[in-house]
Length: 84
Image 1 (cartoon, rainbow, N blue to C red):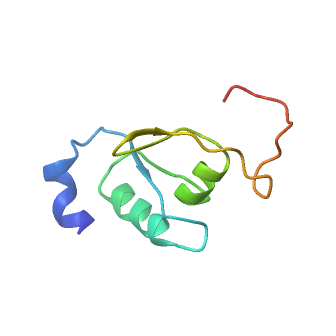
Image 2: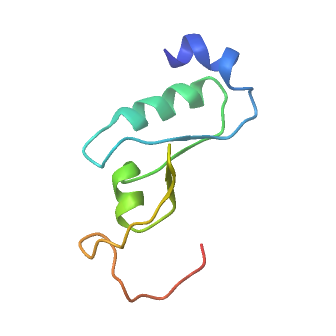
């Protein structure tokens, strides 16, 4: 529904970030292509929401911030912080 709904819901010129639940999904890639063809600036969150959360990055749900530890299978606990 991106082609039909994007212009009425997201002003052109608004940067768009697309993502899936995890890296096994290609829906975000397909969405990025559609937004790009419509003229939007688009970025794809590689690894999806799953890896964002597993790496200990900020997550908020309906009840507020969710504090999660870093999953050592996806991100080392002791590493140089590039502040990126």
